[in-house]
Image 1 (tube, rainbow, N blue to C red):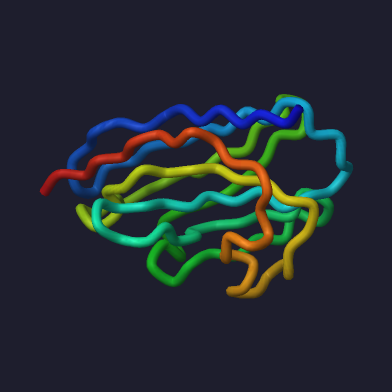
Image 2: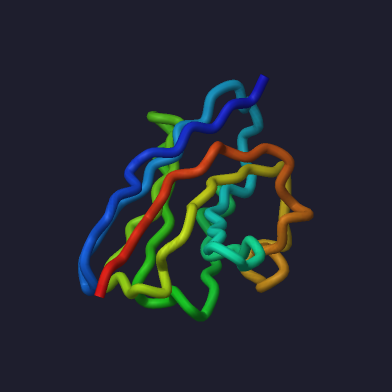
Length: 128
């Protein structure tokens, strides 16, 4: 059984940084898509970053490009979201997700349809 556990969420001030972690257990595929989504109160969940672990190809939503970095450490079965220059509009519950494949490097890779396993979420709050 595949299980994802996120951590690293916290409350920070505008301009601060956080690193979210997602530990993956039970996933045996050599290459897969690992992504971070977020959902703010009253809004739909949206994808922010994705990495295909086979080629390390990444894609970011325009709202986080240049500020967030997604990465993966196969030895630790963990992927990360480094978030810098945080803004109040980044406040949301952040979820990691994995799926066997996605249109790597395209905006479509940030849609939920490609992901079949989700974590429980970790809260990020950015105050002004």
